[in-house]
Length: 141
Ligand SMILES: [Zn+2]
Image (cartoon, rainbow, N blue to C red; front, side):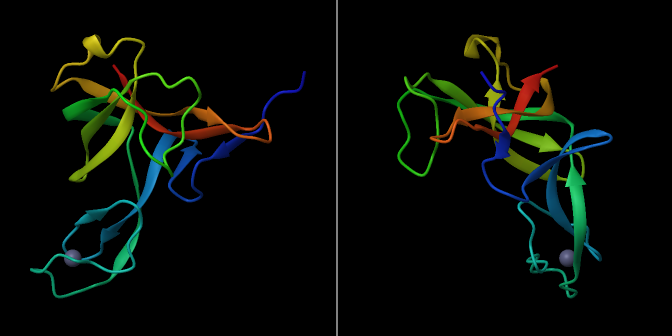
């Protein structure tokens, strides 16, 4: 048996850095508005300068809210069969970014709003070529 290759579900959204996993986005060079995924311009109506720069977000955040997905979502959402309910969290990261991500927990009853969470890169599902498809998730601290 060979070890599965890890492939990101979408290129350019997240990366393992020397400092740990990070989401790859943008930040306005003038007003600091954060964007994820990357944006080519600032969309803050109060900002007169559209220039943005690359920015990385994570790893520690605070859970703002969450929901449990109890039924299989429609394509293009990917998951392993058989479907297992999972939680999706809305997490506030430093820099003002609020982002959605799956929660990495074995029991959704452990999740409480306001908890500290850490960004992790983990398995989302397998693909037809035997690869392990990865995505960003949030793990309870
Ligand atoms: Zn701006």
